[in-house]
Length: 244
Image (cartoon, rainbow, N blue to C red; front, side, top):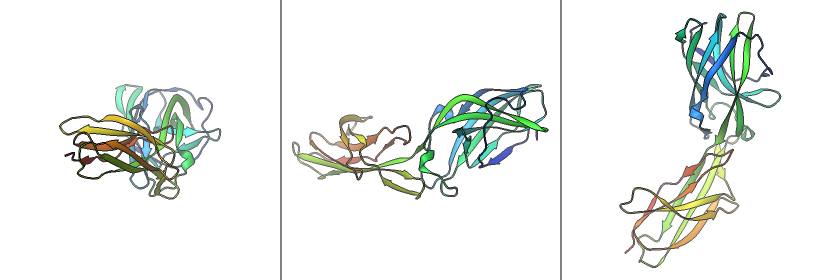
């Protein structure tokens, strides 16, 4: 109903090349603040969206959504749209939340990557679905572990830093090794407020990381991975090593 909150559930349908009925325009469309939507294997992810709709028609169920491919495959698990916030007689602003829950709904790893954004509204006897010319990346979450040893260590001796990079496998709902990634080893001296990259290391085929550095001062070591078009970035926790 016009002005009513709407919940729309998963489905697959074609997105028309142009307006189905016309008589409506969507502007100020934004999804997740322009940032990628990063999804793990268990926690529900709520991605905010917003848009403005202008129409003289009686309407119901306005929403923006993600789609791709010639078949118009859509990606969401639930959509919740706010009531109309009146700007003028024929103009409404909406806020929206897209929900993704990999613990309940089946997700395929092939769904990671670029998705297009469309806006849709229903009228009596028809509706309008328009491509909004926006791209949103949906990514698999990644994780990193770290271990720096020995602890403590004598100044000038060797510190060995190991770790592992994994990423979400949506099909098994588990994290799996993510081999071959280029990962940054970072260090933050005691008393400092930020990390500095010391070197970059490739993970082996099993996602394992290993390198050595000379002990110079007490501080914290961590790994940082910056992600790609299908995988989100991550940083490990820090491992503090006292240098004597």
